Amino acid sequence: MSNNSGPDSATRRGLLLILSSPSGAGKSTLARMLMQWDPTIRFSVSATTRAPRPGEEDGREYYFRDRADFEAMIEAGEMLEHAKVFDNFYGSPKAPVEAAMQEGRDTLFDIDWQGGQQIRNSSLGRDVVSVFVLPPSIAELESRLRGRAQDSDEVISGRMAKSQSEISHWAEYDYVLVNRELDQTFTQLRTILEGERLRRDRQPQLSSFVRSLNQEFDAR
Image (cartoon, rainbow, N blue to C red; front, side):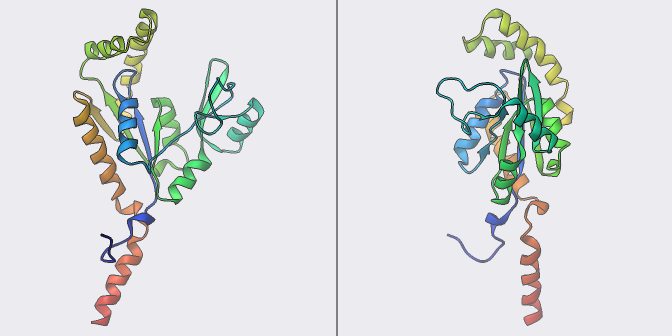
């Protein structure tokens, strides 16, 4: 039941939650669980210069842009992060994130350490909360990749080789979770988000609320 005994949580500023891990450590599963737990969380939709695949829709899987438009967005500072992968650009547009923040909604980024670093260095960097997910062991990481039964031995070997480089950036994150057991790790991730939402600097309405308390003192 709502009441007027405290500040309105709906007026808090949204945050940017960056979730990173080596492939197979569980970040995509954790991201899905987090959005099921709180449907108000917005998943960051990337922009790309690659052509849509059958069944993909603009604004759902990606924002599809031609090369000139994408480069113009970079030049105008409208991308929080971007990278060139093979012959195509990928990046996170700033405008939808800023709109969500104003609505008090959090935006979830499932990205690697390079994209996370760019966002932390962007104009919205002070609103970033970054979490890195580690596997309990390298043997378990490989076992999870093979358990998917989706990739060839060559692809798995490539992912394992890349994992060492990714793990080396763990200390750049605000929080680090070891994903030994999925439900426990999710509980830890949820606790991080709940705590970060309550930070004083993410609740701009607190100043006016405290003023109202002081007015009550003055009226006594």
